[in-house]
Image 1: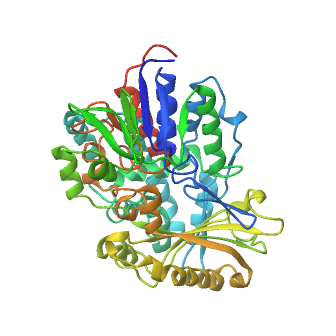
Image 2: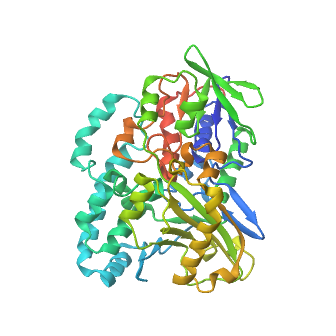
Image 3: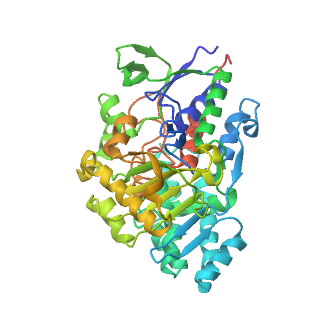
Length: 492
């Protein structure tokens, strides 16, 4: 075993990927996580014979998972079966119109032709512009560190040339005219915690990222990916301690020397990697925070909160796609309420996940398993979720019943929910935000929390709040950044 020990605080996808990459570079690695399972927000719930992925459900850029297995001479496909989805998403609009998105370019154009023939050329132009952004924003920069201001300054001409000062909404509306299609093609920032009207158009690279690698589903759910990575960690000799909370990063003479657990135990290490919300890390776990993290905390704009309703149905709804984006009447105004006014309205838009469309093992025979997510204000709104959560869930079920799932409420069983309060309590997410800080331009690249800690040596950061950002490709890439920051050691 190596004499260089690394402690990874947090076992989400970023923490697991960091642990594996560090182990492959020769470090002895310990992962400490306060949850009962690895996976961070990708926990798995079992209720009444139904299984639910608690967190991320959309998988793309699966090569980032494959790389982790290749590091140890193994193959992802020998451990997890990934299947391609078609469509990737079904969009349902307020007038009952549907739009199936994904698969081939030709099938997407056929769907656009059905709704708005004049937007076919605009869609191709949008994808082409997204491809140019992707080439810089993802292929060149996603796994590169941004702790040096010079790196950011050198990037500015490219950002300007790519129109990074525009919002995603502005980029989409440049090419797309139909109001429903504008919603469909601008909604992607919400998948990483951003408001399409505020999020830098650099995140429009998601269009081409999805086009390049598609949208996939892991048979057995995202939890199956977590289990496969956990097995790989065991085989690689990585130690794990679950149900264990790190209270503080131990810092001596400006250098991270280990961690202090909530039970008073101190664990020593030469390297500490945090897969904790950076806002929580710098405000609660690091004493004597340096100036830049304090400035970023003071000026931070946070991502939205999430209300997630889980339930089973005692019948199947085979007409409902695997992924459905269900739009309410309001769009810009609803997002304004959520992100800027911090107001919980009576209406909502929804992401509806029906894994049993692809994998019937999520539910008993003849039944469906459901995960319905509503973007909501984070806890800065002052919403009393203990008071309103049940009624909010009732309203969601009523809306789904009246639009696309007839007789739903008579068939609901094993229902439960998560609110921003749960994200704050379980995952130590500041303000219960679903994705840490929002992906706006002044919180991207150098302006985001650095992967190399600011003001503390030998402390490194991965996860949604660090560069390059939230979403599984971003989180996995944040761990890849460490290979630019930490040298290999001997002894593996």
